Length: 149
Image 1: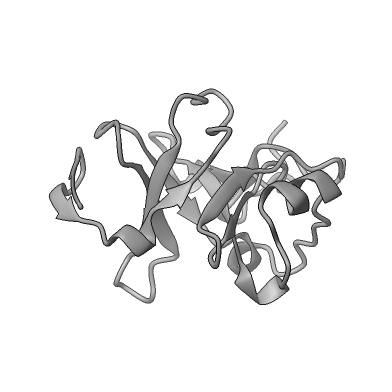
Image 2 (image 1 turned 90 degrees about the horizontal axis):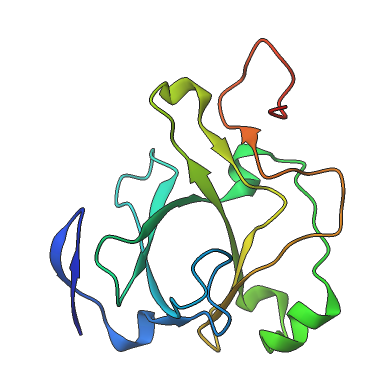
C-alpha cells in the first residue's frame, strides 16, 4: 500500500508490515495502523513509527536494550493476552524518543515501551508497573543522573 508521510513523501508499505494498535497510543487513541520504518544505517539506532492514516504523525523510536543494556521489564498478563503473545521470539520492543532542540538532551520513555507481536502484527504501548523507570531517561550520558527530573 502507498502511504504519504511528512518526512519521506510517498512510500510503499507492504501489507505484512502493517501493525495494528487496537487501542491506539496514549494521546493518539484514534490512530490504529502503523508501520516501522527501519533506518538502513546500521550505526543509527533510531527508526520511525509512522501512522498510516495521518501523514504528519510519526514517532522516533529506538531499541531500549541498545541504549540501556540492563533494561529489564515484565509485561503485565493483560498485555500478553491482548497482544496474543505465545513466544518471546515473536516480540520486538521499542521506546519512543523525544528530541528537543538540544539533541544532547534526547530522552526515551522506558516506562511505556512499545511492544509488538511480529507474528500477529499487533502492537501496544504498555505502561509498566515497575517504578524503576520513568517516561524520560537521557539517551546520551549527562553530568546529572540518567533520569530527567
